[in-house]
Structure formats: structure tokens, C-alpha cells
Length: 156
Image (cartoon, rainbow, N blue to C red; front, side):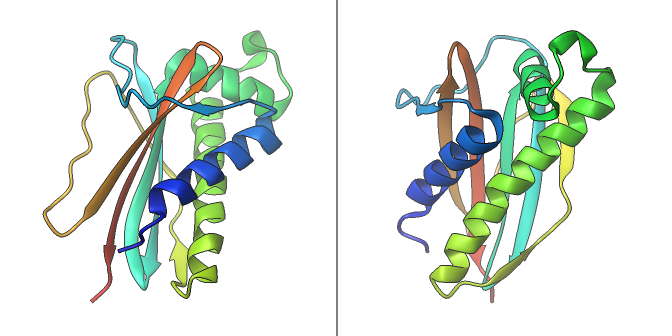
């Protein structure tokens, strides 16, 4: 598949979170996904073309609200409701996947993106089938942790 996909995802995450949110993000090499029992918000954006896949970015609801406030220039008390958070997480996910799409196109793997979607919950797990390459990257931003899961397979 794409040998440096993990690196491309890391660069995209750091670029988008740094530029759009002014967040310093570091890779958490422990690989341990957050299991604090708090509800999470997951944004997903798919892509199709010479490669087919989907990228999920998920974070605890409190961190998702913080991301929303920074992205929209609001303090956390001004973040009104789940809809605002859903839109912000969807947009951040779209930006990260858009960055990745550009790098894939540079490598001769053109693709188009789907609309962002949101999943919320406390106990969900993303699984793949045997023909799909799965990547899991955990990141830290200050005391917060978030996960980027990548599912990709070549188109037939």
C-alpha cells in the first residue's frame, strides 16, 4: 500500500492542529488509546479513487469542546450545544484528510473526499476487514489525548 501513510497522517495532523488551532501536538508512542470512560466525538471523512478509505479522528467530548472554541474564537462557555461541536470536529477532520489527499495525489494516487460525518459514544471500536490496511496514531496536546485511525485499501 502506501509505505509512509503513518508519516503522512502525522504531518497532516500536526500541520492542521498547528495552523488552525495553534496547538502543539506530539505523537504519543505508547499507542494507548484513551480509555477514561468519558464520551467521545469522532469525525470521519472517507475518500475514494485509486485508494479507498476512511479516516477517523476522535477525542473526549471536553477536548472536542475546547477544539471548537479555539477554532471558532469562542471561550468554552460560548460553545453552544452538540451541533457546534459536531461541525467543528467534522471540519478539522475534513482539513486533516484534505491535507492527506493532497499528499496522496502528489504520489500519483488521486482521490475525492466524502462529506464529514460524526459519531458520538463512550464504547465504540473501529474494525476493518482483512483487505484493509489499518493505522492507529495517538496524539497528545497538553494534557489531552486524541486518536487518528486510518482504514485504507487499494481500489480494484
